[in-house]
Length: 148
Image (cartoon, rainbow, N blue to C red; front, side):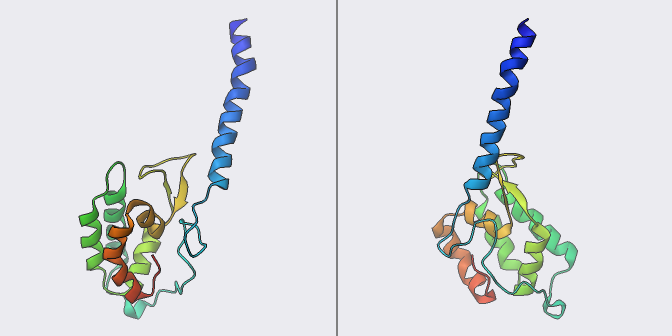
């Protein structure tokens, strides 16, 4: 009898909880001043010109993983972010790193399956860095023509 009552009341409660989490995920998208969501960069030319690359695909993947590690879990290693971005020379290199980073679930710097939101590298940087910290890397992104 106790199991029957648990199933009778437990399943609807779990279903409502999962529904609320999923609803929040789809309705609560953070908007930037330019009207885009945090998960994507504003419209820009994302075509990578191979002749302008100074990084290999594996180097871009390494840089993407270093940046991800610097922002993952509690605390952000800002110095690692600054150092890694300083090593990126061209716009096409940065686009390759953004592509290598891909879309990752974000929830307060951690991994989240249901409650997080898919962000690319730009979204993660916007979420993890304060405005003051973003100003330190913004000139480089401006020179590349990549909004941050």
